[in-house]
Image (cartoon, rainbow, N blue to C red):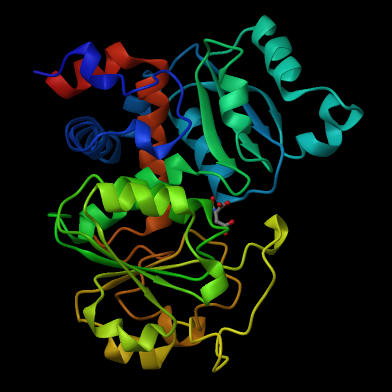
Length: 336
Ligand code: NCD
């Protein structure tokens, strides 16, 4: 029996950082509710958040996160009552208003949830500090992207039902990628996990994340050339260079910097049951003509019952909206 308290993760109703989610929550709430979201028809789902409202504030660029959250809300019957895809330009933030004032103003009009993407680390926390309405961090600068990490762990779970003992290679912009930061925290919840950070030396993982991983007994290694470890890896997690957040571009095939491209050569070295993930957008770090058609590439295309990471995101975001906006409904769904 699931109880209301079980639905409410640490820090509920806000979703700000990946550390809020325990392994128990992931296994007893996230995965089973997402199974239900995958099975229910749109007409069955339309009732779940009927008469509820969402404000979707995107102060920084996004395609997948915004689209999947807004589609998820619609499919559950909620309405996006106000949305901005360029709030940095077209809201009063551009006039110098503080984020807190903007959130307090919109909260006065009433809504059942805020979805917030911003360019600055810590913004989601600031927003949550001024309202009791759920704030969902949809990516805050170089900080975190907790909902991406939850959809990533869901994707991993589909291919590796027992996540304990997996080996993950994070490849690319380790320092700038908020999706890596959040997923590293989630992986720390599992046992016998090995993580390889594959990047040039100056792209070190943040010290606080490294400390956390050590405390959680994750075995962490650094590598400059993905080809050296490709045969050991279960999950290749590739990221672009976060140029829009200030990471300088680098030559991914340079002798000095190492080799961080995923191409046929790497796929030939990889295990037959490995998977290649990418939060997207992909900007050249995967040689698409050589990798896209490989069944191990799960980032974009669903093939039969091999669900893509992108598609997993839609269902996970439905689950997350439900847990913060209608926890009693979650209890009913899980216990029925
Ligand atoms: C990521 C993001 O915005 O952090 N994309 C996403 O949300 N799916 C990754 C990126 O921008 O590189």
